[in-house]
Image (cartoon, rainbow, N blue to C red; front, side):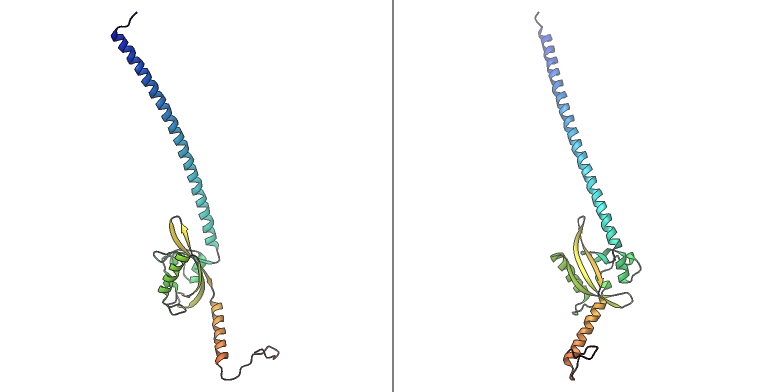
Amino acid sequence: FKATPAVANEIKEVVQLTLAHERMRTLLQDNQARIATQAAELQAQIEALRAAEAKITESEAYNHLLFTDSRVAMVVLDPVSGRVLDCNPAAVQIYRLADVQAVIGLTPADVSAPEQYDGTPSTLAAASKIEQALSDGAIIFDWHHRRPDGSLWDAEVHLSPFRQRDQLLLQIALLDVSDRKRAEEELRLAASVFTHAREGILITSADGTILD
């Protein structure tokens, strides 16, 4: 039996279609396998992202708890705007303001004496300290403050840069050292009087023993 040309062509087309179908089926299987692998990888990435977000949330909640419950006055400052973004209840108390909202939005100048100890205007001194902290890292210094009623007080300031997500911020921790400052000033004045007195001055103990 010899196939006619027409039959031969039909057989050839069937073979070609069968081969094409097999290639298509193989390609489809490969694509399905690749899609399944990519889906598994994507799911793994999603799960890892969710786990990371959960850790961040847990860490933020823990840090916020420490921030809120701390007895040390803490303030978060935006170095770009120079304004307070957040603070804890201890900061509200040390500033003698009504609540956290009354502190948010303030600038260092709003809670400072007009000038610092060396006579530098507080606005300029604050800008200098912020620049120093951003450049060098955490710094500690004394700062002359003023409360809403006009009373002056002194703080030891711990100024530290930190990152919240992608934003660079400053944390301010405040310790009221007014009593220490007054004692230092009294000692300085006493030493000045002792040094410049024209008459003799004796320092004695309680039993009358001359000490100096």
